[in-house]
Amino acid sequence: MASSQSAEDRLIARHFKPLATHPGAFGLVDDAAVLTPPPGHELVLKTDGIVGGVHFFLDDPPETVAQKALRVNLSDLASKGARPAGFLLTLALPAPIDDRWLSRFARGLGADARRYGCPLFGGDTVHTPGPVTISVAAFGTVPKGTMVRRGGARAGDRIFVTGTIGDAALGVRVRMDKKLARRWTLDAAMRRHLETRYLVPQPRNALAEALRRHANGGMDVSDGLAGDLAKLCRASGVGAEVDATLVPLSKAARRALKAAPPLIEPILTGGDDFEILATIPARKVASFRAAAKRAGVAVTEIGRIVVGKSTRFRSADGRTMTFARASYSHF
Image 1 (cartoon, rainbow, N blue to C red):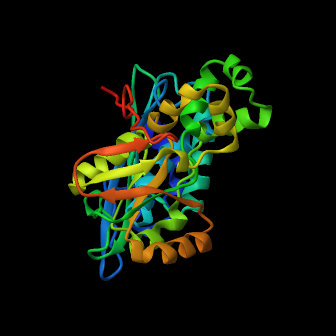
Image 2 (cartoon, helix red, strand yellow):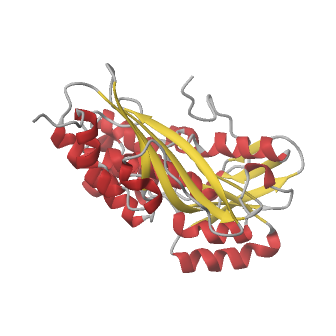
């Protein structure tokens, strides 16, 4: 007797049912799922999509494509001070379905779902005539009224970023033009570091609680530090002064910048950092630094929030820097 399951049903059961570990997902056999936040908590909702040929290379390993799809959303939850609770997945696949690719994709996704405590609750699988397209809707929880918002920055706050800035923007350039690594005098380890930072983001979820307890304002850096800081300032009705020489750079980025000084612009505006930008009241700076150290996340103070509406980056000679395009934009 022929199976009553459709090919799509079998695909979901084989590859994605093992990721649906929360009882509210009902083993992915229902049309919807149920999630109840802990008492006194609120849900924080976020969705981001990635498209083959735009956000990742079509020959990237399926495992890392899956990781990037989930992690770009986890990064946003982290910047809001939220603890991951689960996610929904929409996966648009071109025909014919490559079952081996899908198996590897699900394996990478499942590893991260376990690592970050963020199980799958459901979603959809569809056909597309175009490249692979993946949309994740992630949700997290925060104690009621404590989500860190873009609009919370106040004059006098100190501006912090996590990790290092600009690696991914340089990494995608190296990936597209291998000659750049030699031109920038990068060794093999430096080249791999930059490419990997574009390939697989490192969401700073370990810092979420410290942000929730210390930050007035925050967001993740996805479209470039300069542009995203400007967005935060607009939402908060404030300005910012940043010392560009304080922006933390990796050894590889410093080497590239030394060889090609104009790279400072893509470093500050290129996007795909998936680091956290936060504004911390001066009285909480020491405590925040200590909490970040306990969380194992590097943080760097790069400037301060000021009265006004302008966001200024100053170079080593004190001049205000100008950028052809302050941030990445799809349109």
